[in-house]
Length: 190
Image (cartoon, rainbow, N blue to C red; front, side, top):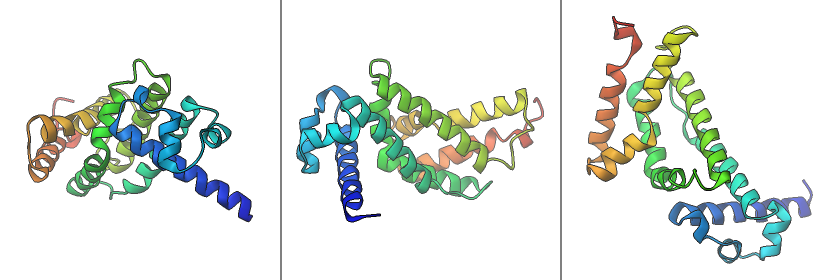
């Protein structure tokens, strides 16, 4: 990579980090390109040149955050406590922002696209980390995946940690208990 390309990549990353940081704390509509430019130490024109505008920036931020999440969510297959610990590490860092973004998905197309992609990535992650317990492809597998998705959703984390005020340890234990209780290998009615 040449020096110019490297400098462009550094600038692009700085803008992505600035926009992500702002959107993790504030509503999409409350963040302008000028806010992002000020945070990143660049001009608005630089952002437009790299991303085409606010919606293009939002799409790029969503992709960038998704790639960061994938790196941080490495967990051993079948180890429920380790899986939950990895998930909680991510939710403790980004859960409030996830909830904030999700609350806006009905009115901001870029966020709706990001949410759909995040759900797809979460499902793929669930298929990977719970591969040892999922039934063969078919209706039983879909049912099991739906249960695992609900049991690991950010809104359940929010309920336990924010709404009910559980400690992280108690919330992790609750999620482990829930995941253990829905293990299809232990169900006799399926």
